[in-house]
Image: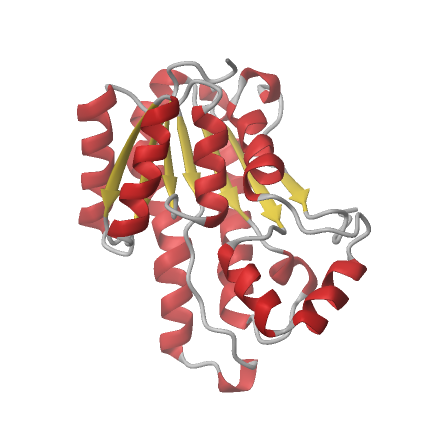
Length: 249
């Protein structure tokens, strides 16, 4: 049990990649707090987690700093500590750069970059105590400059820059800070496959491993690795869990 009795916070944990990571961590003995805005999905995933280990769902708006404080407070009140922070949640609008408005940038940064920043700050005293792990999320959209993803790519690359700085600053406390850049068959991708099967197949065929990742078995297992003692000498790295789509140099 690689994560036995370790306490994890996962934003956007009610479905998709977030749920996959939550289940993978719970199966390794972690107590998992999932944060989401969907009460129905959150309650369902909480039930799944409690059948495996211990789980807690917190409905919260992570764009609100006061809500961030409440998430941390409720987690510590329930489980007494924080070992793992996973900043997974992020919303954005796909639109050409010339049509991108300030409100589009605000949506991406207020749901992605600022919650990552704020949760890391609020969790720091507890992560310092446990010599914990932070897992943030990057994207091929930022690494390759994907069209129509200006606001999303900008926020993701800001998260990457922030993560490298914090990895340097927090290394003295034995806190690991790493990033996952995933491709996975999330519910959103499944919907896209249903509506645009040809485009989906074209995308899959461009992936060297010729398939989409599984939210739990592929992304979740890497998150378990990054949260465990197995990765204690890895920090400041972007791990591409994308079937070889982007090969960093």
